[in-house]
Image: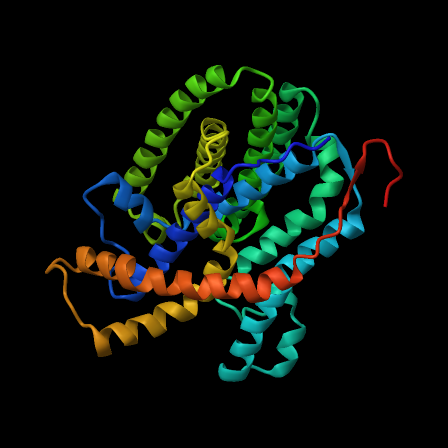
Length: 365
């Protein structure tokens, strides 16, 4: 039978990923230059909030592995659930951009940028994720094995396969950031890291929970510090926009994907069985993260105008400190309020999921 992550821990990670992307877009939209280097590691991670997308994709690989373990997948039902999960809200946002952005109406036929429509800011990530949705039910039999070692070898093999394409692109164009970050050719490392992490989580459940937590706590601390240091180092050397033509992008997402997978896995193991009000609150922020991701491009602009017109308070003379506090105390709560409304009324209306799992060994769909 499949093993599901019943706690809110995976939603905590979703909430973190959404917050990273929200801050990255927000702080720079409010006038902070991309070349600004924060003086502490944690703020460096948020200033390089593009990593939230990679974290999201790693979470997807982790969840798919844990909920489908020991079962076969009915492909058509699986894809039906995925479409119902992402299409309704995305269609509303797309309709808004078509209507008010004066885009040709036939662009509505461009299913969330799969054909390069570019109508919805940030929707490129949905195109990449949907490619993983479409491929996973077929690839899992070659990637996910009962043996953890075989799974790691299979995933490493696929990573090397896509590294070959990145290297060829770099030799030809002299840069590889766009291919690595914006497409499946780089983000697949995150998905594969999530798959390995999910299998590690399933194996860890076979050991006593006290033993799990001791090891998971140590791994989470080490991987978390490594993640903070790596992002701070990267930020100090130019960050996302300062390394656009650097060869570091051949393998940078691979390293960050491994760290993301390690942190997610160790955190979920560490938080296993933790159920309290605070955990549920943060978990809910993760549940509504899809709405937060799609809506924050609009709410940031509206909130900025509202703040200038009706509040206008300056928290600090330092631009980054001031804008960070404005984002945290004003923009983010408004975005979460609208996201919760969207989730409860729109997203939940289409949560009539079909069970796409069946006993292993059944006929293929």
